[in-house]
Amino acid sequence: MILLAGDLSGKKVVDLGCGTGRILRLARKNGAKQVQGYDFDLLGRVFCAIYPIPCTKKDFFTADLTNFDVIFTYLFPEIMKRVEKELWEPLPAGKILISHQFPLPNIKPDEIWQKGIFKIYKYIKP
Ligand SMILES: C[S@@+](CC[C@H](N)C(=O)[O-])C[C@H]1O[C@@H](n2cnc3c(N)ncnc32)[C@H](O)[C@@H]1O
Image (cartoon, rainbow, N blue to C red; front, side, top):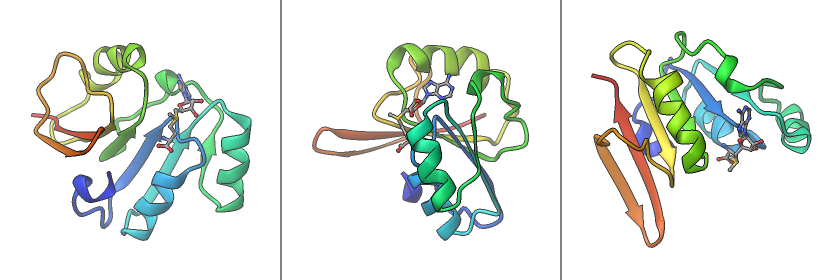
């Protein structure tokens, strides 16, 4: 996922439903200037606190994403429908979305990485 995102140097990165913060930890190692996660899950937030990765207990549908350059997701299809409509569509050009396993349902990805049953989708906002 991190490699597909491209050069993260100086970028602001968010993981919608960040779980333990593993993706954001890698993003930071790869040069991200700012990382932010949102998740409800208590156990995930405990791991984030250990690393430490900023993870806010919040429904990410209420978050303002306009400041972030790169968005990571690993969310079920029903949620991706909402992500597409409510979060991705209003964003300005140039934003990048990297989704593990589940695509945005109505938008053709710019790139797909696949290994066995694993798929990662990359979108660049036109
Ligand atoms: C499959 S896990 C992915 C975790 C992490 N992104 C990763 O790749 O390791 C999905 C996470 O999204 C969180 N989640 C789902 N819907 C959410 C919402 N609306 N707001 C905040 N977190 C949400 C869940 O609590 C869960 O931890």
